[in-house]
Length: 107
Image 1 (cartoon, rainbow, N blue to C red):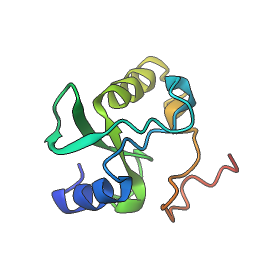
Image 2: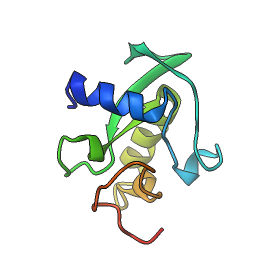
Image 3: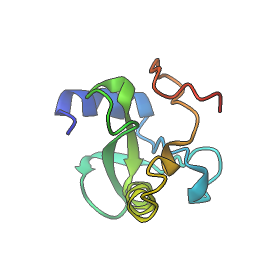
């Protein structure tokens, strides 16, 4: 979904760490797992994916987050399991550097 150029910008923004802030993942305020650029799409240590913050949003830097494979799987699992509330994992504060207006819920 996200081109390599946006993935690279988001990866650099993340400081090579998972940006997941989902409170349902039990990792505290922010995951912070260390990621490795050439491990995109791989499972295991350093593996990661680019994930949309809003599935209906634009393909842009402001609408993506870098997730370790563990958080990525949990986000997908929760969204698939709770179809009545598909934004369950999206109910978290906007990314620190994001200027997106799609997550202005006051959280």
